[in-house]
Amino acid sequence: MALSPHRPIATLNEGPLHAALKTWYAEPGDVFEVPLAGRQIDLVRGDLLVEIQTASLGALKAKLRQLLKHHPVRVVYPVTAAKWIVREDDDGTVLSRRKSPKRGGLVDAFWELVSLPRLFRHERFTCELVLVKEEEVRRHRPRRKRRRKGWVTTERRLLEVVDSRLLCDDDDLRNLLPPGLPVPFTTADLAAGLGCPRNLAQKMAYVLREAEAIRVTGKRGNAILYLAEAA
Image (tube, rainbow, N blue to C red; front, top):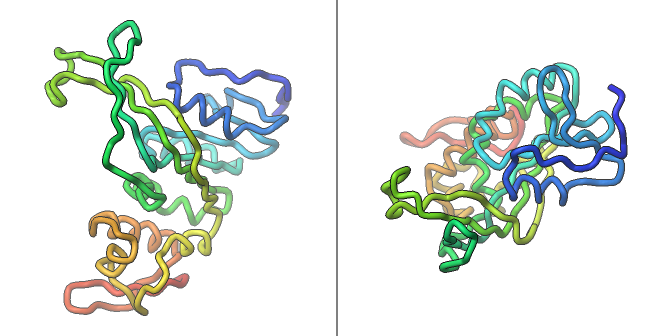
């Protein structure tokens, strides 16, 4: 594939968070918005195709499966560590700004990674989780949404990249497990160790199991027991 190393960053119709992450992620020599096999690739770095996804990961499944047949592919996915809610009028004037009490961590990525568990078995697939601080901009659209009294999220803006974690293999996935887990462990143990809801721990266990980073070793009552090692 002949690519020009001098092609500028293109934004097309992408949102501010997507565009900012692409700029943050870029290195000299990267090429942007490359058409390939009927698809548009966010960023190409040598042989590596990079997709930056700020929405549902499930929406990428078909595209990833097609691209992985012939190319190494990396998905870059932001996870919100802290968020500020900004209300603006239609002219962009800030009406209010407040910090959301919700805080997140890398484990929150598993709300979405549950859509792509078996891709972690693919030798060409990698995923980079990017922990960010962001602004969520809302504008008043009462006819479009009754929830939030008509305030609709119109865009997300990157404030800061806090951390990132590249997931390439089983060890990288197992390193997301909290220290001190019992051997074997249950999803209740996992939720307690991570300080997260049980249903999120269940999704994480499912992804790691399907990726063959952990394995089922039995049951204790109705609880499945896991070992943090490959099947």
